[in-house]
Length: 380
Figure 1 (cartoon, rainbow, N blue to C red):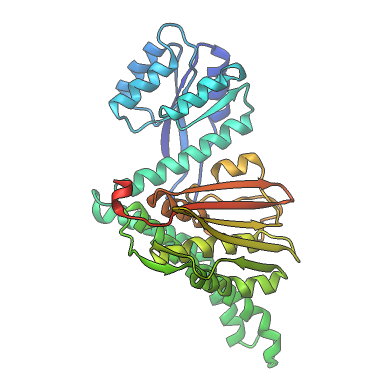
Figure 2 (figure 1 turned 30 degrees about the horizontal axis):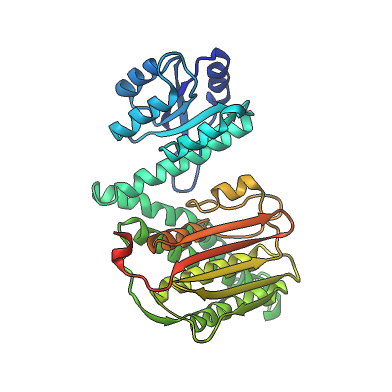
């Protein structure tokens, strides 16, 4: 079992004791981790004590209050940033100091947790940070630690592919042994489930390849003049079988003359992910509208659905690697949790923006804004 060090910096003994109690038996597990991660809790009542502990023990995560005796939390944050320590800092602050906490996140803090916080809020934040930190360190080391790290990264694939392969093998054995009799129609459900599993595995492999490429450094875009409506038509055809299955109407609006300088494969990744998510997370008999337009030097892609939507907490993390909306409405929906993070990485690499507006049980709207004429000098 691995362990992350969490340093709690707060002058209130109750906060430090409460955090220790909440996290002392807490463990994080995820497919890309070989083992559970638990937490060793360190404590500091002042900023000066915090700096001593940081230099001596290099904690992985720092939960940092700003209002401290002596130097303030924001100064501790600056110290960590100037030292370039690989430490995730989360501000813990009262509601009256939210403006300061937001400023701190702009200055390098990963997030902030308002006080008073519930055990569930703290555990959820620590779980997300742990996954992101673990994955970030793994990808950062891909080119420096050789085969061992590459093997660890590929273990994500092996873990995620094991279950569907076992299921397909089981179905094929049942068909081969004619356990349901000689009538071919009796095996149709098994065949359909096997094909669905194969489709999921193929998508996972493609997502992992895209993620690896995007995390390996500066993406090498294969730029050319593309007709956006042609790619939009291909993406609509790609999601059509799922849309028919769910009785979801998909409408795409795009001027036929819209041309932009872009990598056609990456544009297809963006549209495929946005459209497929809009269908997957929609209601039976729902609707998806994709509108693509241009104004001056930018292209705007808007994909709206009438689906299950997301609450504010889910929206905060939806663009992170391996993050999926998990609730009673999504338990039967498969996915790698990589699609939207890949979309965001592509959009960011072009100097673009992606925005989300979503309401539970009403639907979601994703808006992507991209430069119409892109060159590598724009992001250098």
